Image: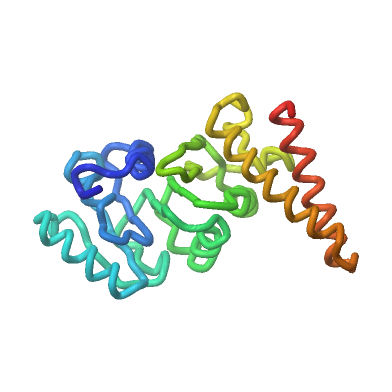
Length: 233
C-alpha cells in the first residue's frame, strides 16, 4: 500500500468521499488516504491528524515526498482537535479503530464538527457504538458496507446530518447490511461473533452466577437470538 495505491479497505473508504470535499483524516498514520484523495482529484484539500509522534512524522514526510504540502496539512493533535473552524472541513474520515474509540473521538470535540456534513467511519470492531452515537447526536446512516481483507472483516459506516431511529437488531447488525443478509462476508462476520459469544456463555455457565455475570449472560443470549433470526440459522 502507498499513496497511489491503497488497500481495498481504504479504497472503499475513499469511494465515499464526494468530489471537491475538504477532508480531515483523523488517525491518518502515513497520510496515504489524504494523499490518494488529492492525487486522484477527489478532495480539494485535506488535513491529516495524528496524536502519536511517530505516525505524525511519517505522515508529514509522506506529504513532503508526494509534494502535496500546498494541499495537505499535517497536524499533531488529539482527535478532532486537528480541525479548526477556518478549515471549512466538510468530510471527516476515521479508519482502523474500534467503534467505541471512534465514538469517543467524535464525542470529545463534537463542536469541531460544525462545518462537517459527512462522516466516513471504518470501525474494526463494535460498530454498534457508532450507530448509537449517531442516534444520540442527530446523524443518520446513508450507507454501510462490510468487506474482508487479509482474513479480517471490516465495516464502513457513512453518516450525514439528520435524525435516525434504529431497532435493537439494526443497531447491532446495521440497517443497510441486514437487507442483504445472504452476503457471504456478512454471514462470516456474524458466524465468528456468535461462535465467540457461545464460547463465553459456556464459560459463564460454570462460573458463580453473580448479578453482573447474569447480566452478561442475558446480553449474550439476546444477541445470539437476534443474529440467528437475521441469518435464518
